[in-house]
Image (cartoon, rainbow, N blue to C red; front, side, top):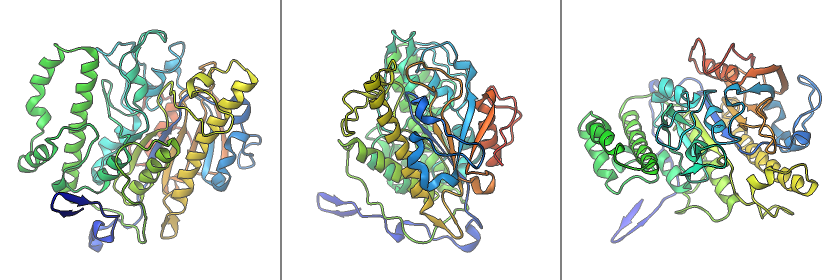
Length: 447
């Protein structure tokens, strides 16, 4: 920032903002990044499934936007989350997408998703290697209340992909400027977390002076307060506390020595303006550019992105012929006109995934690219928005995982293979060895 009397002007990203590391402090090769890109409301089955097998597969109509990166993707088939069967169509299926656990029916007082999401398992193990252990992004604010029509589930279940423990969601950032600032604000400037309190600088300074968690200092009062407030207020309190925890983790990592990967060249992304862009297309592109910048700058190696929450009511009036909202159109009942609108929304969202992949492919890392050094999962927690089925989830894995993934193919697993077998493989690729994860019964072979 350039500061004057009563005014401040934001500067673009400059070379001076990039840390200058000595040779011994740099990584000798690019790191492996992991991202999880969630799309709600299912797909049009008739336009999703590709033809052909193995490396000779052909992109289906819904996947045509991925043609420039076809050699960088695996179309995954026959994976499922069995523990979400026979329950609400949307809410409990979202958190289970990244851990395969059984989500307890709850009005918000006894939230339990039955597991820890894979991104947070990674963050706990390797997140201390970057300033941000993980980076959670989205577009829609957290919902509170209960969906009594949908079986009595707290709607916050469908607002969070990332879970620190079975009872604690990790808040996602939905404001582009604040997401951008999290990458480049130094510890002394005070990391930014959307919704954090106005005394943020004071809390940050206190943490710098004393190696103790402010949450540990107030944990007893927090538990007492939880016994006196409503379910909705408990959700707000949990998110507020998790926001503080995120600041603490950021500060802790900033102050410790780390080996970083520093890319040559430039990544020109001006700091976004305040607030949420009114144009949905601009909002999505800004968040995806920021995610790409986070990986390129090695600010984090783990990220989640929700292009919509469960039962997202986002409108897509900018698409020709689309007249209603996303979730409503997903209940198409095989009506030709409704199905056509639903399909346009799906394929637009897939094109945004393609945009991210092309962006990462364009970012060189010596003889490789950021996409080559990534493993990025895209997909839904249900197959068809009308049926809410969980068998054969629509999933695409992109990137070559720094040499751990053989991409450019269609991979058919046996029917009802646990999706957690895929998670086991992704964990192993980043060096995390587990006997099991969720309901896994093996490790999906990605090589």
